[in-house]
Structure formats: structure tokens, C-alpha cells
Amino acid sequence: MFMKDFVVAQAYLNLLEDSTTEFKRAHVIIVDDDPTNRVLLRSVCEKIGIGIIDEAEDGVIAMELISRFQPDLILLDIHMPRMDGLELMRQLRANPALERLAILVQTGLQGEDDRVRCFNLGATDVVSRPFHLTELKARITAHLRSAIASRVLFDFRNRIQAHIEITHSFLDAILPTQEKAEIIAASFGMTCSSVYRPHDEIGGDLWSLHTIDDDLLGILLVDASAHGLAGAINALRVDCLVQEYMADFRDPGLFLNKLDAAMAKISFGQLFAGAVAMTFNKKTGELCYAGSGSPYPLLISNGFVTELKTRGLPLGSGVVSLTTAQTTLKEGDTLVLYSDGWSESITGEPSALLAKADVTRYDLAQSLAPEEYLIDDLTLITFQRRASHAV
Figure 1 (spheres, one colour):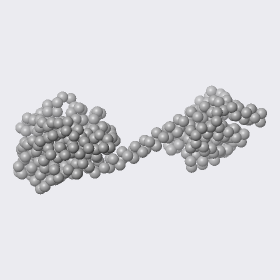
Figure 2 (cartoon, rainbow, N blue to C red; figure 1 turned 135 degrees about the vertical axis):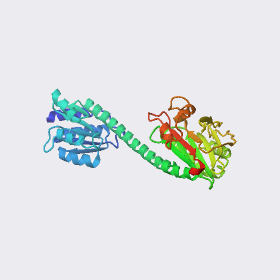
Figure 3 (cartoon, one colour; figure 1 turned 60 degrees about the vertical axis):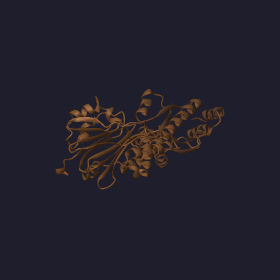
């Protein structure tokens, strides 16, 4: 750039608006072998209020700076010694860690083919010299805002993913694996098949098996409000209360009443859930159950499907008043518990589907669970009481 052009540009700079604090933490690297250009571009950046400005006179130095600091924006010249701007863009776009980096090419090339070549190599934008300073300022400002917003979103997504992974580990510690469920069920003379499939990466369904004593097995299915991370957190909050009232699980109705009252008292956000609680006595076959705000469990006996009707608002309302009902799980009978994610993902009524199913299958739950996209978290658990000679 000739000195006269630089003087005119400096005078024009004085007309630009004063800097703000918007870009106080922004980082820009000016890559240009012409010191006059670097001075002018630095002046524009300072006028905008960019807090961190570095300079490089060729692509080699620029690559070192970019690799160390990962700036928000590069102001890049094309013709430079050692490594020109085109080669620098090739290397930047080949690096996954730098492929999102904003690159504003500032060049004296005027041909359409030259500009297209810059874009094909990864330029975010191209501005021609001699500069129109108000336009240059506007473009730098726009790309910085976009880059900063992208970085904030990227960081936010990483934080959310970290929270999801932590929550996932807690859920994995609570949810029984298929192998563990089979072992526990076998010790009570039953076979067990289960499917847990969240709508999102994680979900708000929760189920568990509890050995209350040598003869009594506790079964719990919870469908907490919300989906995804919020639903999973709600499920963990419910599980904390479940552990507190586990001593009352022998009476499922009493247990759920206490759970409802405790959930209603939570002061840091409303907490609601549908739930079914059951106990099974392996000696007598007695099945005691209660539920609230959740689909009815189903009992399949001699080919007939019976709904084990429960009642009540979702837990957390504070007005649930349940009593424990009783029935018998005879040898060869099958018990089916599920969240509404299963009933909403099948065609027809669950009882009609089960009436046609081969309930003797060891993988009954897996055979009944659809593979297509789910609109809600899906949990499906089946228990079959084995004949006494098979125990």
C-alpha cells in the first residue's frame, strides 16, 4: 500500500465509532507480509475493541500462533513468502481442531476465479484491497460475533454432554442389567426379560429389583416427568427418595403414598412421576401391587390377559391415597410392566398384542419392543413364574 493511501486510511479510521467491550476477550491474528497492511488492520481491530491482536508475516509463523492459541478470527493475505495464504488455508482445513476457524481473506486479487479459489480452500469471507474501512469493520465484527457465538454454543454443548455422561453413569449404577435381572429373578423362581430404551441419549424411566428377604422380591417401575437430561435428573431425584422409604416397600400402597408426600414437599422444582410398586412371594405366589399415574400392569394366565388396575394422580401431587391390592402369580403365568413409551409405540392395545404373543419366549420383552423411532422413553419388563419342578 502506498503511503498516501495509508494516510487517507488513517484519517478515515478516525471517523469510525469508538471501541466497545464486546470483543474485549476476542483474539484475532493478522497474517500479512506487508507491515503497512498489518498496521492498518491492527488499527481497525483496535478501533473495534478487539482485546488480543497478534501478527504474523508469513504462513509458517501464523500456523505456530494459530496452533498455540486457536484464535477467533484470521485476517489472511494470500501472497506471502515461505507459506502463502492458500497453503495455510489447506493446512488449517485439514486439521479437525481448526476446521471451524473463521478466515477473512484480504487480498488485492480481483478476478472472480481467484475469489472462488479462496472460498473452495476454506475462506469464510473475502475482502478486496484497497479497503473500504467501514465495510471491513462491519465484516470483521460480523465474523467475530459469529465465531464467538459458535464457540459459546460449542462449549455449552460440551458442558451438557459432560452432564449427560455423568447422569448416564448414575443411571447405569441403578438400572439392572439383563444379566443381573435374570439372576435375581431366577432366585425367586422366575425368568425375566427387559428392554430399556430412552427417547433421547438418556431418559426419565427407572426400574429396579429389590431382594426384601429370602422369599420376597420387590419390583419398581418409575416414569419421571420430562425427557432427556431433565427426565434423567428427575428419575435420580425420585430414586433418592425411594432409598429413603425402602423399609416400607413390603406394603406397596403405603410406600407410594409416602413417596408422593415426599415428592410434593420438594422445594427446588416440581417433581412428578408415574410409578408401579410390587412384591412377589416365591413361596405363596402372592403378588401385592399398587400404582399411580402409570399404565396398568398386565397378568397373562392361561392365555387370558388381565389388567391389574391401579389408580391415582402422578406421584408428586401430594394427594395420592393408595391401598395395596393382591392377586396370585401362578406357575406359568406371565407378568408385564411397562411405561407409556411402549404402549404409545405399538399399534393397538397392549393386551391384544400380548394375547397373540408367545409368552414362553425367554426374550419376550425384546420380541415385543419396536425398533423404530420412539416418541417417549420405553421400558418393558416381563416375568414368568416357572413351574416348581423347573425351579
